[in-house]
Length: 250
Image (cartoon, one colour):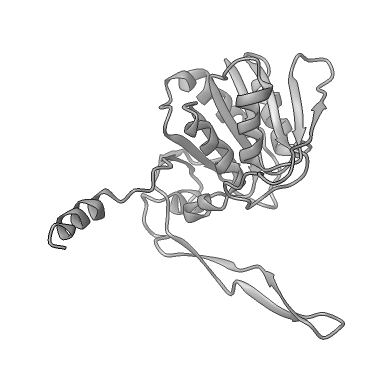
């Protein structure tokens, strides 16, 4: 398969290089990734300055790579429209260091790279190692290779798979929905040496439905791989119908 690989941790990150190693044997790979970390950029794109692109070498292989001074969404958009010689069969984003669970997917650069894929009608997968301390990406790499080889071409073009792999040996795989994740104690108020107040964003996750076995949050907490099908269409069709009925009386 022809695969476009991206991430939000940067082209030098361990996770993306483990992903390349896992997929390179049986596939034609193109890597278009940020030149540095771009975590939590969401689906931001660059419009008011030019994008700079540097070729990135993978010695001893035919893999084509580019480092882009933009966001993950920029990278996939640029890859699809300007850099790749032909459309890829699939976009794979990751392997991210840290989880992308619940409502965090709205902020995630990793997921946004995959969203850019499905916006363009390309089947896409985002994969994350759900830990900031555990750094063994090998199982996540093996998993994504199996998924791509087994049914990569059968994935729907308008729905991405958001995969979170727990640290250690997983108990199994769960198909899940996005959990309802909020954050508490988000801002740390501080004072700089000149007496000026500033705020440092931090916060701890608070999962509203952490005990619901249908959620990605529960699955990863319990040691399972979570695979969640995600769409970018945010329309609430139930409210749309109700609104249409109410508007009749205006």
